[in-house]
Length: 259
Ligand SMILES: Nc1ncnc2c1ncn2[C@@H]1O[C@H](COP(=O)(O)OP(=O)(O)OP(=O)(O)O)[C@@H](O)[C@H]1O
Image (cartoon, rainbow, N blue to C red; front, side, top):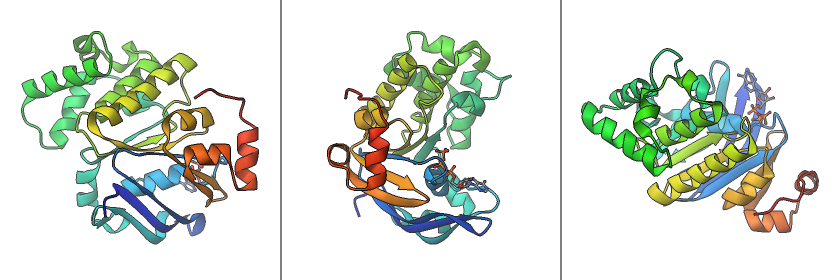
């Protein structure tokens, strides 16, 4: 199998109530799959299932999520934790919530790297400055020495994306990464994710309500409603010739956006 990740007939329940049913898709190396659809249709749940982040009450009840030859829902917690960050990284709507308020950004990133077995702090600092510079930060050293509250929400989100790339994961799971941002910063975060793909060949699974973001970024798109897939295919084709009534309605509700 050459795919980075493959979902096969996945059902997920919370407290025995099924919220995701029979979802199948695959993401190739360097490919971006956008997932859009109704609120509460299970988009975030799909991403969280890969990372083992469903929490108490959440279970993959059927199907497989293959990462290479590893079926993620069946993986022992320790093995899954080792993959998280180094192979698969996740970014959320607000990176600020993931940072601890009372320690510098640099200290927290170093802690993350240590958790993945890195021991050379000087090499880490150099790599962190290098990544931040690649992602367009003018003063990487200042960012690392900052406390999160010294950075704007948009800046925190941009740092979050760059930080996720420190371990050069093969797959980035992005859950509404732009929805809390103003339009200018949204564009910067989109550019950052596209740059991550260009620099590192990272595949991206992107959940968003923003069809404009899907048009701009995604090679393939999966549209969800009531826990099920109503449409899945090449983004351009789905946007130009949607087949399901729900996708047609969803696209009709979007103001005309340029690619
Ligand atoms: N921890 C949880 N416990 C119980 N039910 C949950 C939990 N998390 C999500 N759900 C339910 O699972 C369903 C899918 O939720 P999910 O957050 O995946 O949807 P979504 O498509 O990402 O929604 P949105 O677009 O509003 O973020 C919803 O009915 C939600 O209420």
